[in-house]
Length: 139
Image (cartoon, rainbow, N blue to C red; front, side, top):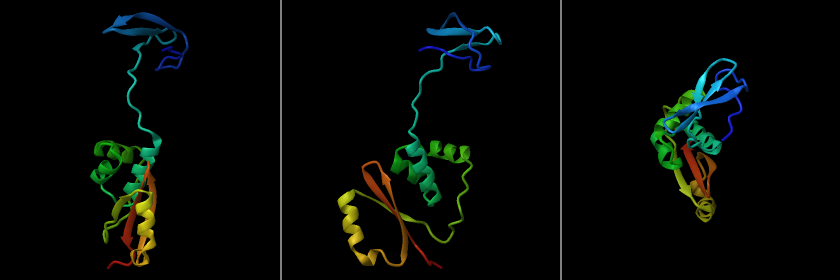
């Protein structure tokens, strides 16, 4: 892995400066900052971040989102804080959701009685589809 810039000043005058705990240490000649290469961690695809934020805005809890997407509820909470998302007030209802494959979704949508009197959103989740449904005029 090639180090191109100092993480502190973004300077490109980088030289090797020893090894600490089996990791190469570097020195920035511009600002005299010592640093090592960061470990490469897991990065979650932006697709899942977007889906988690959408589900949160639809009224699902952090734990429900965790079960659906497979990302920790703490991570979802951190994304909500990071992007400063405010959930609209949904005190009168809590949406229900079902996860279907393509054929199951088609069969569900064929039944007109299940479609009347409710709002719904269908969103893609990998190779499956999530149908979020709530009653429109609930008192």
